[in-house]
Image (cartoon, rainbow, N blue to C red; front, top):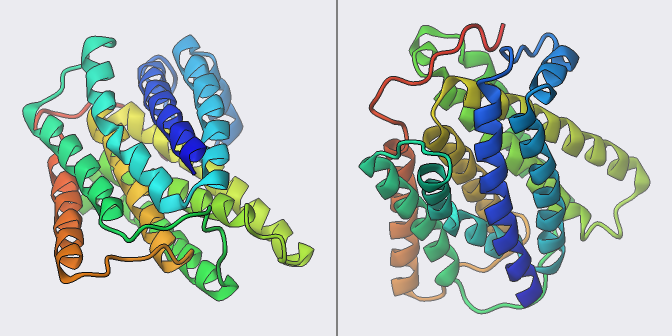
Length: 288
């Protein structure tokens, strides 16, 4: 487990760095269009910044998968969430992006809240990869329906003004869907091949969809609000999966329950504070 936690720390740093590279690269590429996925991918790859971000993200993904195979998903994702502060530091110090005080607060609240959720659980060991197929399908199906609903609703007048927030939420949910599936695959030794094949396909589709939604969100919004929200939603959903799907234990004492409830409130407050007050970055027709 200690090695898994160390890998999660490395994955957090690499993921944040990759996201900042991709954010810069997105603004040097043509708008992402889901109706033209191959052309959109070529346009993104033509940006050296985005190509570098993709490369770093690929390394981060392998490190993340290795971490999931060695430690419980709730622990891994809490470590990734607690690395959110490094996102603001790198964005401001390395890339020169402005970070509003409320966004610093949002990242601190979100990371601390997600970390508190795990700190308050009873001690446990092992990788916690076991699960019930019904619980896995129910949780993954719920995430898929939520992502589809948001994707279909992003065109409405209510969401059109801040579509980057909706797209970031979709990306976070899809990243969570893929992450939960990958964690399950590390403990799916007894699952039949008939179920395993579509499961792997679903993981790939969710991962690819998450990449396109994230690129579209990055083109429309600022670095902190989009990257921060994607990470917050992805990590929170996977921590929930740790408890609901993989059986990671909850707090055993009344005080622990109160602290976990407070952690949930911190995460919700973080999601409300992340969007910037200033006008979001303009981009034309990112999704047709």
